[in-house]
Image (cartoon, rainbow, N blue to C red):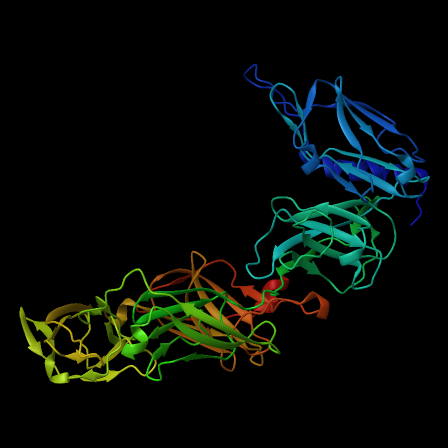
Length: 561
């Protein structure tokens, strides 16, 4: 894009003004302490020089200065193969560089960020930029926007934003950037002094400082669009008919969603024999795919929740239990590489604690909520329940009265027994268990005990109905308290119905489950797959007790506002 001399000058001044917007002088008021950052007096060659071919640049300030973490804070865009040498000379900065390494007709910018500060009080000069061009004009176009985490949608820091004028998918993996900058603490970025050309834009959390996406744990953001920067001329007139013009650079407000790919192959990262008859092993990450456990004990009780990370094994064969070592074969499909079946043999050695349990302990949750089951929790699996050795009683006028109930072993959990009864709300209960209420395969039993609990009332909770207009989409909807998921439901036909929610203020998150696997999936750069979209309801939502809440939410519209 070509401009006449005056417009080029205006553009350079405007860009410097934008970049220096944080570097304002502050007058000393009410005290001798110096709070004013250094002020540039002159630069040789001058800032904004064209046809640059100097080996030395000297920037003089109004006071003695120091450099703070210059190697970490200095951003040179486009990058130079051999980094300039930055030293302090007198009241200024000396920049030594090799002009033969500079590209022709290219504008370079050296952004010192806040690395320059006065020598006495360490008052930093924010966002100081020295720019020059090896051609006859300063390139004056720019890119600006923000980088946010693809899942939390919070701004990120310590991330590079990179422009490439090579459009191959491998560019971010093999080529040096055409231009680059770093986001600020709010995730915002601006790349100034860009030449008119076509570019692709990326964000990179660069763990090895080479500006390449070449490590599996590096964060990446990408857009398939190709951008050509430019300037929009906007005219306006006042009541007298006088026309004024202003110029606006584009693209602006680019949003990059950064994510880390899931490339970690599955493996078993720990296994322990805590007791002679109890083993446990843990996957490195949630095991979403199928797996099986082979052990020389056909009656062993193996427990894991759906999509587990931990697997628990209670041995039943006495000969196996008495062995100093036990081999367990685990066959599992890798969730990240589903074509791979892994086979691990775990060798469990003799435990430090060689004592086995002498009785079965029984516990219970002290609070029974209306929508939740009441479960007795055992210290080890059992194979016999004698219901006549248990009594369930409620407190009425200071007297405990018996109430009917039924018992059922939980088919999904070997350590739980469900008690079903007509529970009264806001009532004190107790459970009396006699000796030999439960037994395991080794004849161990419980001792007599009394367990107390109380019930809550349904009016202590609120309900929340969320209507989504785009009912064809699958959403995983979560209520968050201090970033912790306290409730989760999958939408059905555009409706999510939360029941029995404790009164509090929550954030609401909706994950667009595009592949229907009931979890959030990150992106895959090589396949041009973006992370599944995540939306947050604007602000926080208060759930009140004994209240039916209902909201209509269009996440996509809210995101585009």
